[in-house]
Amino acid sequence: MILFCKKCLMPNTRPRVQFDADGICNACHNAEQKLQIDWDDRKKQFLEYVERFRPSQGPYDCIVPWSGGKDSSYIAHRLKFEFGLNPLLVTFSPLIPNEVGQINRETFLGLGFDQIMVRPNQKVARRLARRFFRERGNPKVAWDAGVNTVPVQIAVRFNIPLIFYAEHGESEYGGRVLSEESKKIRDFTEVLEHQIGDDPRNWVDDEINEHDLAPYIYPEQSEIDRVGVKAMYFAYFFRWSMLENYRYISKVMPFATEPKGRCDGTFTNFDSLDDKIDNLYYYLQFIKFGFGRATRDACRMIQNGQMTREEGLELARKYDDEFPQTHFNSHLEYLGLSEPEFHAIIDQHRNPELWEHRGNAWKLRYTLE
Image 1 (cartoon, rainbow, N blue to C red):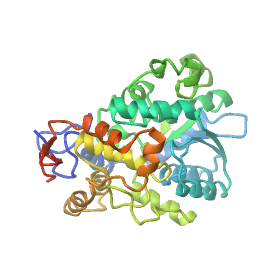
Image 2 (tube, helix red, strand yellow):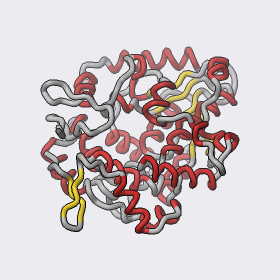
Image 3 (cartoon, helix red, strand yellow):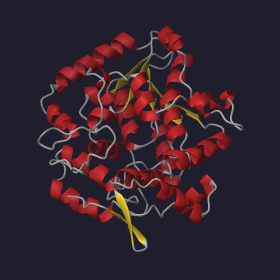
Image 4 (cartoon, rainbow, N blue to C red):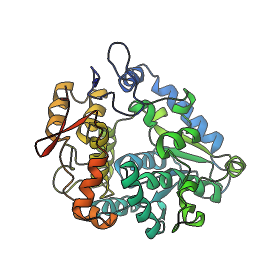
């Protein structure tokens, strides 16, 4: 039975989401708990962690895993200009970079930051994207591994023990929280289980060897311990909102947004802009779990009191099922697929509990409510 959160719109088809007896999801409970947090005290904790873990030598105080988007740029800007730190920005390259992402990265770097970008072997990246699109309905599985791994690899190599990630997704958006401590300090077990779902060494095949997978493999724990790497969630110390992050970064730089006014599948124009494949990624979320990008965005705004449930419901019904047409030809070219092959793979990932084939079209078995 499909249930929808009574406060936001999140269905119980979201992986690992939890509902209470009153039909409220754990992301909404987390949003309520944030209203009771003493954020001044959290800021003091943040400053204590910075003093405890910042390196005693070297030019960089910390690492920010940075895409050039609103969230990571918001973090980096506050660290540098509010708290006087010198962060090194570490970027794992998008699968299919686009112009708006490049514009935002160049503009932000012009404010006075150093960046390291890792662009992995493209033959391997494309093979893995194609493989996981077929097998898991997610072309970004290997990219998820790289974006989680490369900042830690750089931290170990340059002896920078402090990394600031954005938010703890399992608590912010509904999932399985391993412990209260995992909301603050990034837990490798959780990353492997929830964000990668596999050990990249298992991806070796007749064309890819373990050396090819170097950008995706976590450093040995002994190396992490030697440097004393601590990966913290910025959102634990400062209240998190994707809309407020966008408003902040728009005030400090001319932040470029989606040129056509909104992104495929949603009503927003400022989130997940740096990779053309993100439009497909969110569409596959809709195919596999029955809720799309508009539901995702609306839930986050509802939980932060920036939108009513009724407003979010109208937008989700309007945009959730929109096909990602904007970069569709780029998707086909990158994945090496014909259009019929593409649609056949999409249909293989439709959950039969959610979808039925009526006439000549696929229809959801339920209505968003």
